Image (cartoon, rainbow, N blue to C red; front, side, top):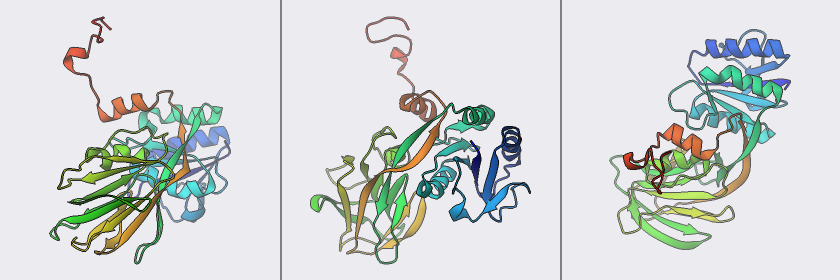
Length: 293
């Protein structure tokens, strides 16, 4: 571990975390790199334009929450650099460690006691007014408040699956299955899986189920002529709007990014802890055979 990049949550006082990382870096002979022009960085931290921040780094630390981690993945993924998310906010489902365990995570990095996992992304093909995009959580088409329902047709590899009126549709990565897609009734999917999860948002009609596509299948979302205009969001950020008649094409982008794991717990442990999953009272202390746990 020689070079470590820092991606900081915007407009947040992170002095305590930065000081702790700087102390570790000085003791470990690690050079820190941050974004050019960020006044929160100490003087001796090297600075670069954001687009090249991750170049030559062994790891990028994302200090903030899930949004900061997703932003760091966009900077690090083109350079095959893994990202370690440090939660300095509230839930931080995607982040690996919280502030209280920062020193332990840094020690694990220095000692090589960590693993790297790959993450799938979604590639949104360009359309008029919206450039091509990579999403690490989800691509969402959603109705504009006050403009009426979204009328959409979903096609898989060009074949019609369903048409419905709804609030919109969510195309999520396995990592993003615990975000908007989960809130809309979608399944929990291990972030190590490949493929795409498609979840209708408050559909009007008999078909109200999530659909899981393989990594080789392409999703087409047509905004039908009877639809109101819809907004297009990527990882929670507004990209633009789509008028009736427009079709969006989304495909899975396997092995698109890398994340650092320093905890031994897997998907199930993280889901129970982060989402507050609890057992029914009757099963909390006994298994199904009646044996006390």
